Image (cartoon, rainbow, N blue to C red):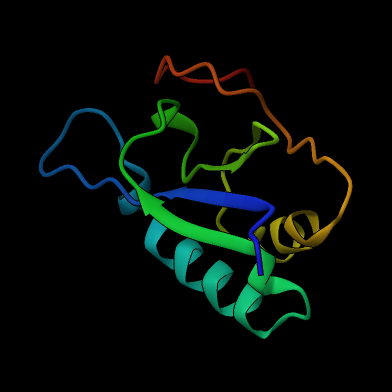
Length: 108
C-alpha cells in the first residue's frame, strides 16, 4: 500500500546542560507509541512513522510533524491518540502549531 502520510518524531538527545532536547522529553516514547498504535489500526499501514533529529522548536518538544500536511504537534507526549487519529484521517490535517525552526520558546 502506498503511504499517504509520514510522521517525523524528534528523538534528538543532547548530553549535558544547554538547549533542551525532544529525546530527553519523551520523544522516543512518543515514537514507539505512534508506531505501535498505527501498526494496530485499520489503515495504519498508510502512515509511516520515523524518528528524526532536531526539528527546530526544542523548547516545546517533543515535536511531531506530518508530511505532506506540514502539520505540527509540539509537546506531543501524552497526545499520541490524538496524533494517531489525525494521521489516519483522509482529510488534510492541521496539527496545533506551525514549525518555525527557530528552536526558541514558543508563546505561552
